[in-house]
Length: 293
Ligand SMILES: [Zn+2]
Ligand SMILES: [Zn+2]
Image 1 (cartoon, rainbow, N blue to C red):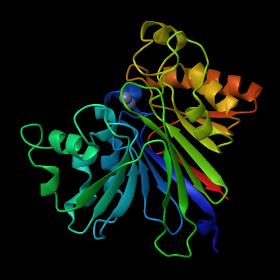
Image 2 (cartoon, protein in one colour):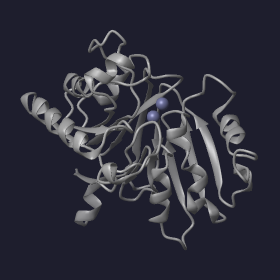
Image 3 (spheres, protein in one colour):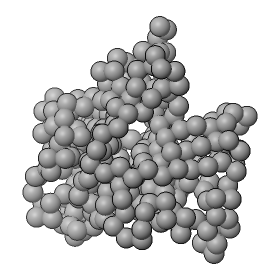
């Protein structure tokens, strides 16, 4: 096997929480909402979430090839699905995206909710009118396997657990060979500000090489938005430390957090993490991590 076949890589296409935003003051980290892609040797692309960053992932795909891929959708809030109708590979007949999602608490199945959202008058066409196709699979608190393009390829094992947020929300853990990456984009800290972590969230992150985690608030912001579904950066560090993860990627930056503030918060978090043997970095658009196995 060549060197390229020995590593899993993940790329951040959208790292912003809540709503897309733009401007010089947020240009370095970027203003697109949640979308992370995984490139795993022998596998079709795997995505976490379909926020506006998805459009840029799509623009990087081969324009002449039929697309096949999988998305692990955390939940149905706008900032996690808004990129779907702008995903250019779905403009090619034969392209297909399989979307795993928790069962929504409102509005029927995930397929029904998405069909109700992407249609006139909210959007010019329906999902069914796109040349490519999408299938939705509801998967809550379970494990499943993503197979490679050939039977001899090592499969990707996926674990999904419901995590506290607003409405049904999943966190995911992907394991390929000896590499594990956890994705908890929107994670409600206990509203009393304590550091308790649910067993499901701990299970997702246990011993992970990389934990991609909600980092929406400073402690002061959390104090005024306790039940908005998110957490302080300190809580994100606490989750990763409790789970004995190796690296924490701060994600889902608040739209009000300009680049200099994210730099400052990330430096503080990195110093805190170092004391516990945890590497901490802040995600930015275009960041790629290569994880060798
Ligand atoms: Zn979100
Ligand atoms: Zn949300």
